[in-house]
Image (cartoon, rainbow, N blue to C red):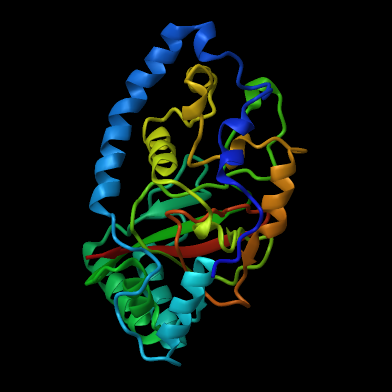
Length: 326
């Protein structure tokens, strides 16, 4: 049974935009703009429908019998009930992972893709052999902790390997500039979102000690079991892929002129104004994961509301984000 805060997904759609000062206009005030937005959106809705159909397997209902009382069975139960499960990486493997990362990056700023400030990095190491070593170590950690069995059972998949992407963030969050042109403050729910994937397990591994100021992963327990319809999810994910979810003035203008029933986003947190009652409901329900809880967080981000990287100045976070490969 999911722990469901009283949040209706419909409140995270067109209800966010009525009276929102950054979204002015309606479809009928300028139908040509609305048609232009539809022209961009409809192909992505078609592709998302295909992806939904291909991934249409019973998620959350295990097809694999896991021995009761085992760590994997405990993790699976938490995934089914809460949408997430937490484990601790074997110390020897974690140190080996750190050694590989250190060897691959040379220094914090060398050999990694990053933004122009040099404070944020995402991606693979440049040495393919080190990437293969890193993936093998992470896969072994998933085997030993029961994370792999739990993910396979929950998503009804058979994973043969992983892809490990390194993340480094330091000295404050990535600048988002949500409504800078409209002189609106960033909402407290900033970056709350669903992933655009279907039927895919998500795993984050902390490599550094992560406390509240260090940008921990956040998740709303039970949100994976909210009453998301397939149609609703297809639109949200298509909106993200079409780039109409972006908050720059031009994309906001196009989005505002879409028909009301299509006005919903995967990354909806940026558009919930402070003071909106649903904002407090989401914030009260949100769970924050720090290192004391565990350093491996497995979650259902396909329909589970989550966010991260709310980093404070002077703090840093190193982590791996893991993709499971069939």
